[in-house]
Image (cartoon, helix red, strand yellow):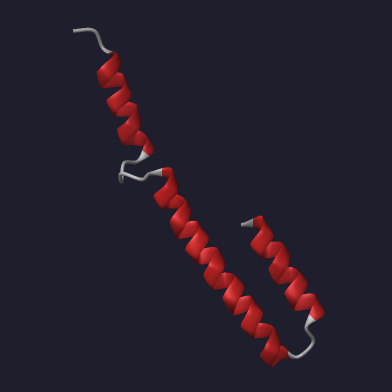
Length: 64
């Protein structure tokens, strides 16, 4: 995400025409949004949250 911010700042400072400047900023924003959404899918591929995993780990580790 930091890379997208850096690229956005570079695009903003190097492109002088306002109309053209908004196009790469918009494209970068879409890629950043897609990466953020995809990051959640990769971290939790089966739809479980961290809390669900902790409860499952506690349940498995309890002696019977």
